[in-house]
Amino acid sequence: MILIDVVNAVCDKLTRRHPHVFGPKDADGKPLTTPDWEGIKAQERAEKMPSTQSSSVLDGVTQGLPALTRAHKLQKRCARVGFDWSTVAPVIDKVREELEEVEHELAQTHVDATRVEEEIGDLLFAVVNVARHLGTDAEQALRVANQKFERRFRGVESHLRNNGKNIQKYQLDELESAWQAVKKDE
Image 1 (cartoon, rainbow, N blue to C red):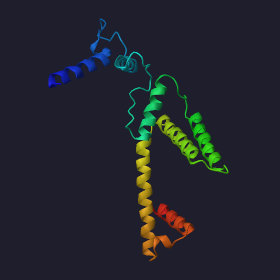
Image 2: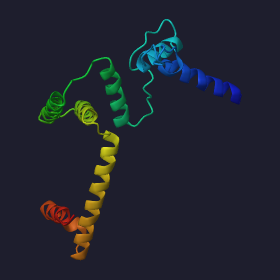
Image 3: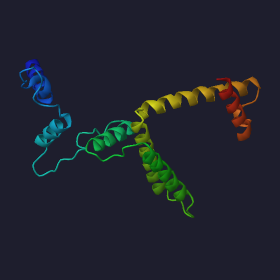
Image 4: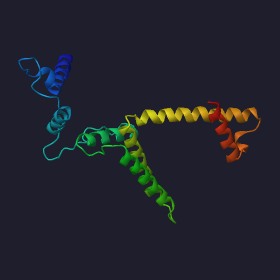
């Protein structure tokens, strides 16, 4: 493909996806059409899809995305067609339900690691949904939490090193005490 073909393809896409900008106007210069990006994109996906294959709202959500980002995009796509809670309260209830299901699996006589993994996945998916409802990027929120944890744990290591004892020699309650001291100092 040569450069002019790329430019033409981009121009065609912009014109097609923005009929409210490039389409017909009324006498006052106002667009006669309203933007319907999702409808336009769904039509584009349907045109790319073989006629034997049915299209889905979820088509085009890239498999290669980080899992938290992909969960957010899947949920957002479903929300656009009305498959979503209107408030955050039932989403938080869903997180509690999923946590109870993890606890239930852990309480079994013979813990099935596959079932535990599945339930933890459901729990994470529900937490991403809470983040989405609150306008928070779950991927970014987890990055920040990782940084905070790392900073605090390095503080614990430093605190313990100053006491002259190897971190592996401390008991959990002593480590927790150092953790709380680091948190208090922040």
